Length: 215
Image 1 (spheres, rainbow, N blue to C red):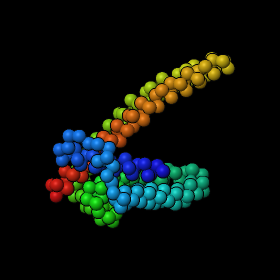
Image 2: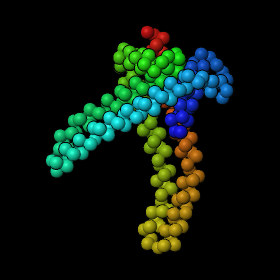
Image 3: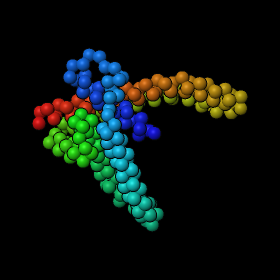
Image 4: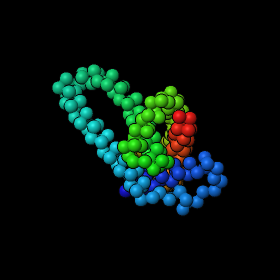
């Protein structure tokens, strides 16, 4: 269900960005949701299979690592730190590759295999640009995340105060206040997440458009 909804959102965002880049001043929901059955399911299956494959790889990798750590009484974990550090740029590379493959497929209506090859070729030829974009978007995401979490700390204050007072009544009141504030803030948090997702997807779409036009 989540992948189904995210596929609709991804198609709308990418197609909307392309239309806006072409000069469209107004975009309707009907225009953004003109996905086409075949294209929708190609995007759906790409992300579903990629997610399953990544999850399976992580699971297969973690099992021997856990066993190695147990056999060495935890000392082996220190030896695995370089491997863990290596996984960070690899995971970054894979995530951007899949993002660009989605964009390539949506814009050009290509097959899954063609989109993966095209995205990889564009990334190889413009690796520096992708590194800079990833850093910029990553920093923006961190800043937005910090700003979004600051009210959460304030929301927890009534609960913490009630717990510190060691009074059942104060704790109950604190929990109720925190829950009410949390319910009121949840729509704002979802809106911020939506804005961040829209900005990130639009930025990657425009990056792909610019780089393929220059190729």
